[in-house]
Length: 411
Length: 188
Image (cartoon, rainbow over all chains, first blue to last red; front, side, top):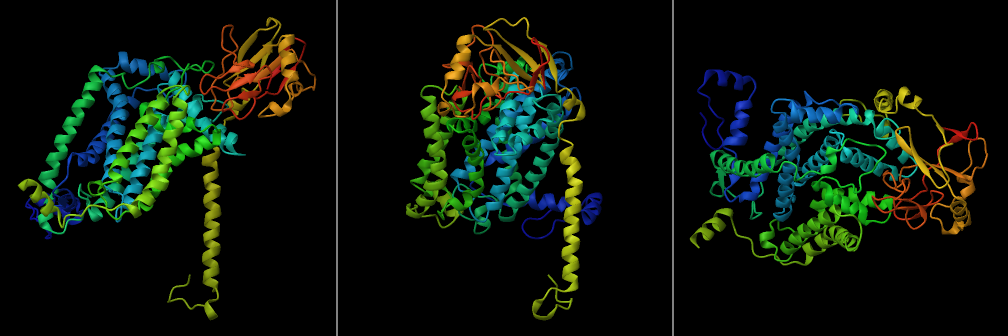
């Protein structure tokens, strides 16, 4: 089967040829995942799109199985999860895969986003690709938040209470919106019911947006560590076998680390308070969200005003939508941006600092630190990026990917 | 609006076809909103949830200085039998010092307009992000103002349940309540 560039593939298998003539799925796979010309110089950061896809599939598979035993009812939910852990065959494994899978899905996606930031993957002509990615991030956050409520432990209940109460900051209609979200006067059974329904629905919407993300990606192809466009066949290799193999290797390495957590420290990334059944009359000493929300939680708390905090927290994500237009530099890759390179790394340090602040009660030095880190976060996107693009002098770009790769090889 | 095959009115004036297109589109939009409403409204509290909206409590056994927590509409309600000092403290505060100015008197008046300063009844939900403030149990921290202290983000309430310090924007809410006898109170 199949020739290389340009010509439509010829299928020797008659059944495949018959189907493909009527529904060209095989041609599609051939074109987009086999001969698809892909820059030859990817580093391992380019694995994380594939890794995130694997995690999404894994989350849906484990989630569907969990749903067959889970009871979305405030009286039954907590014990049904314990039953999955103790009585249901392999239930503990499926649940630990799902629980830690959420964390590892976020790890993959955060690294994937960092890759995009560092190598300027959001710049023209990939702005919509980037925006679809931010949409996926938002959907993932909503899904993860609602999923965390389902076991109906103390952290589930109080996390849900705090996060839904964010909407009460909206002037005039805030309280009605919160009652509407709850389906009652507090987080209770109706809230749990609807969160379960949405938690089951949203992953499939994520799959649909991922499909759009991939379609948009395949219009102009992937960016690469040099951030320059391939100019011909000497700059690319076919996606298969070169990157199917490299992605496969990356996925396996990632899954090994994931398995370490699932089998040896399944509760390290979670909060012990969620193994206490929800009690609407007692707030835990400290309400802490899952680690992947900590930087945003720190921004929320850094602002001493309720509405302001909520606006800044959502603004921290919203600013990413505008990123392709905030960055005025025409050079994509930080490899050739001697100043901005350090600021991207500083942004990563800043987000980690926010995460640390978010994990601790707002006292002592955590308060000024979280305020400073919040200011820097927005300074980076809103002021530094537009200004630096104008004044920074980028290093000379290589004339082609092939030239840069071969020069490096020569030494 | 009109494509080349449809004769346009003079000087690009709207044609009958344009009018029909706009009118049909507008009706379609109205219809879509009308259909969307039941789906949105469906998420509002159901009748049985609304029906759970009153609860009756006997306050005879609550000693002076003591406070209890009862559940109403799935939320905690604090009933505090205030001491004389606490009442005085609450009444003496200048309104200008309060982020959400309200007199103590207004907060201890039941639905029959009867003022009972010894009984403070508030919803035990912090107006910041909904945590349950501490201060009802003996030994709980009550904050600098002797009322309640929210452990989540450090809001402090006084002996009238009014916000004094911290990120919460409003006083603890006072539910509608009625003393049906001197010791029996109906909340809701």
